[in-house]
Length: 489
Image (cartoon, rainbow, N blue to C red):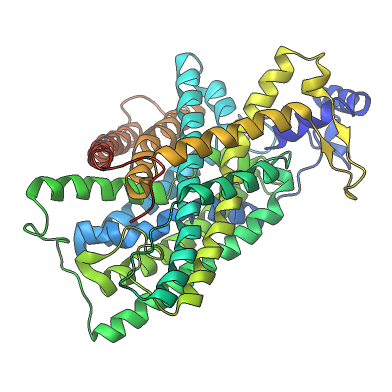
């Protein structure tokens, strides 16, 4: 997200930055101590900060729906599908990381965003399609994370209610106030200008993700011990408990849930743009970060998903920590759900920064002389010298308010998660990375490598269509009984 930060700083560093960019074009900026080879302020990211960004984005609310997903698929297909998606995500992320620079991996022209990479390699209508899908998916993720955060805040209140009133009391509470609280927090954090300045938030969020995942895992183990055995079956929830058609739709939705749990390719290039200049090349560092983060998340996914299924079998809740498969110890559930909320605050920002940057860059190019868009106000109350941009304040606040309102209207956690995973998985995680890699490496058409890459893309397209159909069926079913702004069951 160096691009967004540059947009914000350009107005105040015009003299130095302009000279630096000119020297970069002449090939002399590489020796600068303050600027990279493209004239921008030196990037300081490492494999560990990149891994923190990825883990923050990936180990989100999706991990809590995996026990439900495995319950639909069973002990054989559930873990197998999870492993399959992890391998596909790693492989296509490696392909995508090679597209950060056009040409040579250490000296080639940088592509600062996912759209820049598509434009450099594919061009034409594909750039517009990619931009629409990427930013629409980011909006969807923001909505999904708002829903998930409100559910966790609601769960804290309900857990305390159950502890005091007993489990018979339904403790009906509306989720709307909690969505508003999350939205207000996001208005504040969304004023952080760019990716370079949210590393601390990503690291904190990554720690929180491990906290609640570990608690969920521990509670699952305790439940298995209490049950004196492992629940579940090889094929998942049985016909009879659900109708044959429901079994099909639920299984397809489970694919979407698992796909969403691994979805981060749409912000990979932006994360890679925070990594310090070579050597080693950004693509090599990003591959290492991808290995660390995907391996870590897969381990947690397997442990949390499988242990949740082992604990509850076919009755695994849609959200392991908020579905009240567990009631006690209530204070531990409160800690876990608080950790989820903190994590989702960071994850929201990691996902939305590319969209924020895109709109702000476009606005500055469209109205370069506007003080409202390019001007910044020094805030004397902030010791770090934080500068407030009025357009950033206005546009990002409007975005947060809009996603919060939509979240109030559609609080269907599992179905929304599944749909988001489905529509974003094939185009952004598979199709565009594969097509860009083919162009970048000049792979001959109909060669064995080209055919294998196309088969991979086709297989993932089929999964995407099927998963989206399952999620839409689930959302339509929810809409039949849902009343907006009502209290939770």
